[in-house]
Image (cartoon, rainbow, N blue to C red; front, side):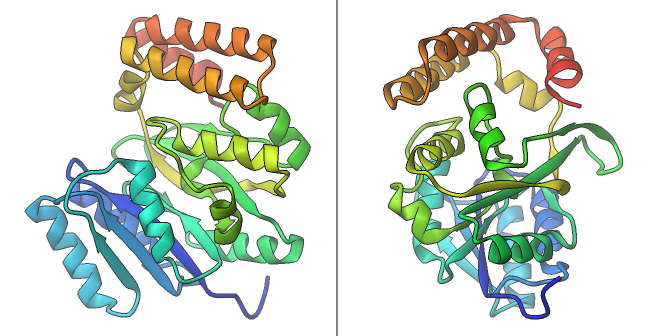
Length: 275
C-alpha cells in the first residue's frame, strides 16, 4: 500500500425518494474510510424531504471541510446531476458512490494504490447485493478484471459496477461526461470510454455493498423498460460498438427477461446473471 495518497473527490447524488437511514449508512461508510477523500461532493437533485435534509445537515456540521453540497432547484435526473457535481469536483481523481450503498472501509486505499501504480483511467470493482441488512446478502455481481476482457464483456452487459468506479475527471470530460440516457447513463459512458481507448480495469475484490432485491428487479420489467433497453442497444450499434449479432442477442435476451413474471425474473437475475 502507498504511504502517501493523492487527493481525490467523491461524487454522489441524492433525491427525495431516498430513505434517510440509507443515506446515513452510505455517508457513514465514507467518513470511516482508512483513506479519507479531500471532499465529498453531494448533489441534491431537487428539493429533499425534511428527514433527508437533517441527515445532510448533520454530516455537514460534523465534517464542515469535507462536504460540498450542490443544491438543485428541481430534479434533473442522474446524468445531469452527476455532471453538475463533476464540474464542482476539485480533484483529478473522482470516486463514484450511490447514496444508498455501503463502501468497504479500505475501498479508496485499494483503488488509489492501483490507479496511481498502473496509471488507469477508470478503475472499478466487485459488489455484493443485499436487502435490508448488510448481512442479508443475495449475490455478487462479478465483472471482468482486465482491459481486453472488459471490452468483450461490454458487448453483452455493463462491464462496471457504477457505484464502485474511480476515474480521472479530465478523461471523463474529454468523452463529454454523462449523457441523458435514463437507466444506462454509466453503460453509455463506458462504451464511449472503450471506443476512445481509455485504460480500464476492475479490482477482484468486493468494494461496495449494494441494496438490491425485488425493487430493483421490478424496475427491470414492463414496456417502458423494454423501450429503454432497445434504445440503449441501438445507440451502441450506431456508435459502431455493437455488431448486428450483438444487437440481436442482447435485445432478444433483455426483452425476454423484461416480459417474464416478476418472480421468475427475480430467479433469473439471482440464479443466472449473478453468482
